[in-house]
Structures are given as structure tokens and as C-alpha cells.
Amino acid sequence: MTVRHFLRDDDLSPAEQARVLDLAQAMKADPFGQQLLAGPKAVALLFDKPSTRTRVSFSVGVAQLGGYPLIIDTESSQIGRGEPIEDTVRVLDRQVCAIVWRTFEQSRLQTMAAISKVPVVNSLTDEFHPCQILADLQTIREHKGTLAGLTMSYLGDGANNMAHSYLLGGALAGMHVRIGTPDEYLPNAQVEADARRIAAETGGSVLITHDAKTAAAGADVLVTDTWLSMGQESEQAARSEVFKPYAVDEAALALAAPDAIVLHCLPAYRGKEISAGVIDGPHSVVWDEAENRLHAQKALLAFLLEESAR
Image 1 (cartoon, rainbow, N blue to C red):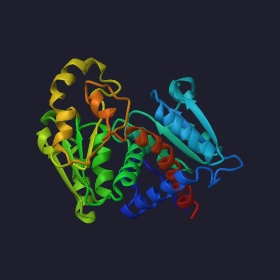
Image 2: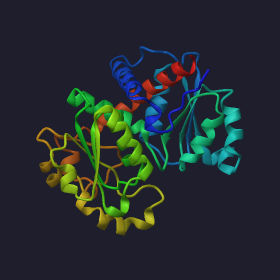
Image 3: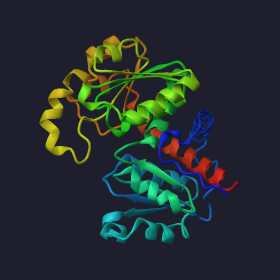
């Protein structure tokens, strides 16, 4: 038996990504239709970082699947006091059917997955945020009917976890992914190379540009994220200045396709990375996007558990 983990977006193949999204839509239509965690089976939800949407969506999702969401704030656990990750995993994987972890370095998840006997899910690291992208793709497909061939333009910090996951997840879906970012905030070179390789296989493409207008022009989907991630508070003034041209505001929206939709993973800072008029306006699908975390993550858990049982 091979245990399937979801540590970054390309842990799924293009076909598997589509399968998860199909299942997510089915689960949205019938929230209690699959009681695969009945018993109930427990899913460990570990949080090294503050959380609203991740905590709520995974907790509700596990419950809707008939399971028990075991929420662990790691500061109050032994792993938060320096217990080796390996020792924590050896305790958890005997008592839960999956482990979901919101943490810092990607290497921590990799260490956990290397020995875990149950699926490990990345609910956010400094490098990737793949569960968010599944929800975003589900949202785009709901509003546009398809993913392949659409242009998805992300404006903001090209070196952060959202940009990395948009590159990989969008390429898997056959989308044309654009990243508009200052030259000093370029995506990780290996992640970009991986995305280009995937796009060549799926019919998508990748464009990295410092010109925000070029990135936004004709886009079917406009995306942004906060300019200040956790741990970067000391950089607030400098970042606010350098990212100003990359705000998703009325001017950026005017450059996009007339029927463009706007995404933001939240929390949002109106007047910074996105204007109030855009996030609260008719092109915004942000609240559908937030809800779809629930459905996409339920589908992901079902996929990983089914594949790991083969």
C-alpha cells in the first residue's frame, strides 16, 4: 500500500486534480452524502499559525464526512516544545486517519510525510498553499464552466506561497498563468521551471512579468493576496510602496476581460492589495471561493484516503 500525501499542488496529476474538483462539486451539491469517516474516524488538524478559513473549513468538512476533527494548537502540544516531528507522527498515525498541518517550512511537512502511515495534507506552508488553489479552481470552474485555456493573472508578491501554488495548480489545469510582480519578488526558479514543464504537457503557459498592466490585460481571472505574510511585519512600509502598482483596483479590473472574475484568498486589506470597490463589487467571487475551501478539502481527503487504501 502506498500512502498518498498532498504537500504541493503537483502531488496530483492533471487527471487527478480534475477528479478531485468533480468530487468537490458533487459534495457541494450533497454535503452529507458521503460518510466516509463515519465511526467516527479522527483527522488531526495541526496549527502552528493563526487561522480562520482553514480551521473552519477543515473542521466542518471532517464533521460532514462523519468524522471527528481533532484540533491541535501546536503551541500547547509537545511538538511546540521541541518534540521531534517523527515522534509526534508515530503517535498520531496510530490514532487518526489523516493529518492536516498548517506550518512554516515545507521541510517540516516533508519530514512528517516521510514516515507517516496516513495521508499528510499541507493546509499552508511558507512555500505552498495547495488546498486554497483547489478551492479557487473549483470557484473558477463554477463561474466560467471550464479551466483549460483561461488566463489567470496574479498580481502581487511573486515569491510567496500563493504565487507558487497558482503556478503549479493553474498549469495542471491547462490555464495560462501570469504572475505580475516586482523583479525583486520573483517566484522560486525551480517552481517556475516545474510549472513550465507541466504547462507544456497540459496546453497551458506561464508568464512572469514586472509589468502589472501586461499581466492584467485581457485576463479571465484576476487574483491577488495580502502583500504582508506572517513573519514579515517589519517589512510593511517597504512592501506597501513597492507593491502599489500591483493592486487589484478599478484600473486593473478595467484592463481585464469584461467578464473577468476576481479572487482573493483572504484576509484582505481594502485599499492595499485590493480596492473595496473591487472585492465588494460584482466581479468578486471571493465569498464563493472561501466557501469552496470546505468542499474542495472534503474531496481531497476522500481522494487521498481512497488512493491510500488501494
